[in-house]
Image (cartoon, rainbow, N blue to C red; front, side):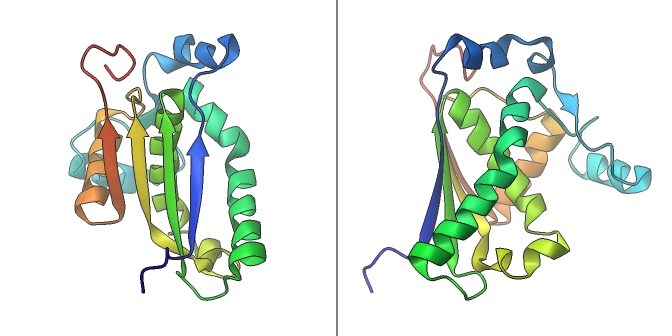
Amino acid sequence: DSRMPNSIFVLFRGTYSAKSAGSYSKPNSLVPFDIATELDPNELQKLLNENQGKMFGVLQGINKILEDVYHSIIESMVYLSKAYLNASSPGSIKVYTTGHSLGGGLTTLFAVDWMGLTKLPQYQEAPYNIFSKKICCVSLASPRVLSPAYSNYFCQETIDGNILFRRVTNRGDPVPG
């Protein structure tokens, strides 16, 4: 069958105003902010050892943009999948995400968050179980938004086949550097 499978595309816009550009220049977007504080200390240490790092962190100024709309995105995905794709079977909807510049950073954060979200018990039941646990992520001219350990975790998810990832950059572009 040559038809496109049932798919949801989550697209993130790049920098478009002084306010959105400010997310790069905030002090909390210069160094990663620790996000794994809710984990059991022994579990966290095991993860850090596996991923060869000191912390699981993100650039909080950029991550806050995603945090503010994350659940609205998920609920919109559910609505569109049910209303327009008539989704009901577990894992029947493929998820794709992409973005440019600031949007590329957001798409990377969304993809890694997707891995954690799909492992939560409530997201393994209807209506959320209609989505594939795997995600396709294409990041265009994105800043680096993950700490080294969290980046290693992300890379392992790509090796394991859970995230299909492509990061596209141009030599000389200051944002990806």
